[in-house]
Image 1 (tube, rainbow over the protein chains, first blue to last red):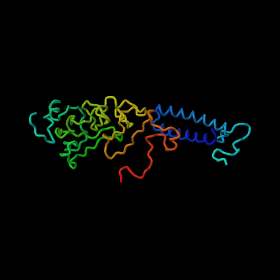
Image 2: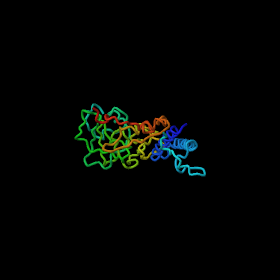
Image 3: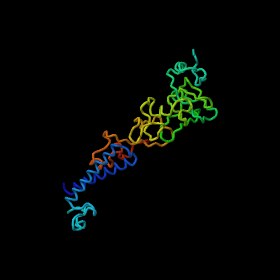
Image 4: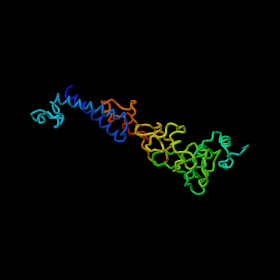
Length: 81
Length: 206
């Protein structure tokens, strides 16, 4: 997947996670919600790793390597020309 | 009982037995707890809401149900007109012949031997469904957080007036959520919460 597709997937996963979190705040023992939350957080972790591998760091805390490659443009929110 | 003229009120003493009640009310007697212990003085006769002809709103007593906000407690006891039982709160428990087991009595058994968990107002047949999903125990055994309720949380029949309620959302794994792309587009993960603003509907349909 390209950068745009990876970002879209991350956006969808983050939204689903937040929805599950809000539900669990009022239903902390709901097993279905809990298993869905674990599922989507696992997917989100994999999607973030994929983005970091393909497109560079997703956040400043994802910088790896000897250089501080976070300063390398484009940043995730920047659109390429 | 013979050919008794049907009045709105029949003396309690006439109904000596379940058979009397059944004969008078055309249905089986259902034991119920008594009326609220704090009945206003002189408040004995509950009109029925089933008989529109005899239903006189301005004569209805302030039969406010003892709901603690969760909606579990059913509406106040109302008796069929043919019974018009004497719900005298000063005397020993009366059954009123009403359909609901909990007349709002704060005590567990209202002193009559009947327990709250007979009916939390969820359904008349409440053997396995002891929690109307309102989150309140009502003497129930089931945990609403586990979505163990009678499934009647959307049932407004037994809700008290002038009390706001929030229906408890459920997630049981039965197609309640959108896939992720659609969820993001619709602005919610939950199908039930997908309520786009259309500018019409509700209580002001035009």
